Image 1 (cartoon, rainbow, N blue to C red):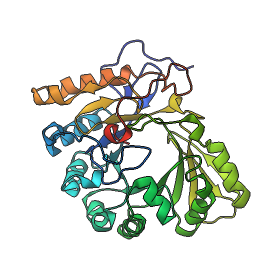
Image 2 (image 1 turned 60 degrees about the vertical axis):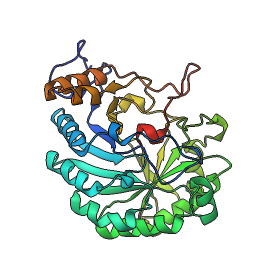
Image 3 (image 1 turned 30 degrees about the vertical axis):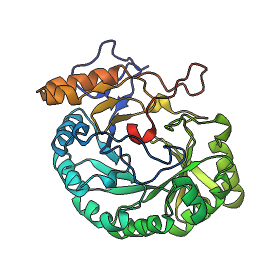
Length: 338
């Protein structure tokens, strides 16, 4: 039987009171985005952070170095849309220098990958995850408010050519909007070798218009695909997605992230740093730890590491989406970081 510490450890891995070890960090490098996805933000966009409030490249890199020293082993670069951050490849290069052994990936909408993929790979990105919610041009335009499917597909081709593989596709499924495309996405995965990961619709929109009735359970998605393309080999370690292979040996894979119907909080190993330096131990957390203020006030690395350890130690058991007392975070996904 595992015995968890009763007081916050001063050294060793980043552990919380439930015995979970955090070693996966998401760093948002900007809150800005060049899409206006309907389930994330209003058509007119949001009030972007003043540039002076964003962490500088040097500040981001210093904090990453502290996280690496605390046991973080994988980094996902997010936004907003990370590729709109000016000179992103140089930032990646700085990240790679402080984390030579880090697994570095990027989550992007793919719009600018056609011009950036090779530079990002050269700078140190290992893999790309691209958000794509429809394979139909008109529906893609409706959901993102941008007629950009062709550019995203070109970006995927560039990412593959640059070696940012295996490529994963994130598809948010919304009832009555794009749930009729899940088998088409599976067919696409088989044709391309991509891993398509279907994500349950979560309450992370700026308008707070999320409706539970629009959540398509992951089990229903899997059933629909399995009827046409039988699946096998369910695999889920500490990743948020449960992945399946095609039973006939076809390339590609299917993943489901059942954040609403089958929460995986008990194995969560993820942490988040927002673009302005707020440290979050959960995507749905109601509390944040301000790292920017002490950083700019001259705090030592040891001081900052202590704040991070405190934040992880205080991590709650889970997001409580399925409880009557659930409260949606005030900030949207684009402001928190994916």
